[in-house]
Amino acid sequence: MNEAQGVQAFHQRELDAGRFLIQRCTACTKHVYFPRESCPHCGSAALEWTTPQGTGTVYAVTTVRRKPADGGDLNVSLVDLDEGVRLMSRVDDLAPGAVRIGQRVKTRVHLQDGRGLVLFDAIEGPAA
Ligand SMILES: [Zn+2]
Image 1 (cartoon, protein in one colour):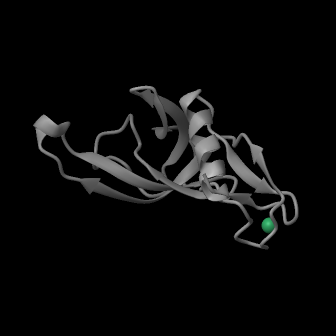
Image 2 (cartoon, helix red, strand yellow; image 1 turned 135 degrees about the vertical axis):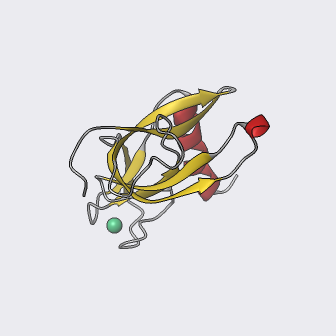
């Protein structure tokens, strides 16, 4: 197993245990996601794990069309966490098409067949 698989495997194990972690660079203090071995901002390898607040703002959204038998349409959203990292998932508690850019959301770890994944729920708050 190489190093890159190491941090990503750790991240997934934590998700499977219901914990969503991102990295923070102790050299330049920026947050890093998806997990990696060295900071994309300054190149330092001094990354530590941290629990994000979980709150963020929808940056972009698309609706993926699916047949009802496959679970129906779903939204795929790019969300900027307040820590400054961007991740892609779906806003779980809004109908596809109801998700708006600027919508405030909060992360939630969802377990599916024993595997953790990060979803978003809509929250009240000012649009960015
Ligand atoms: Zn850095």
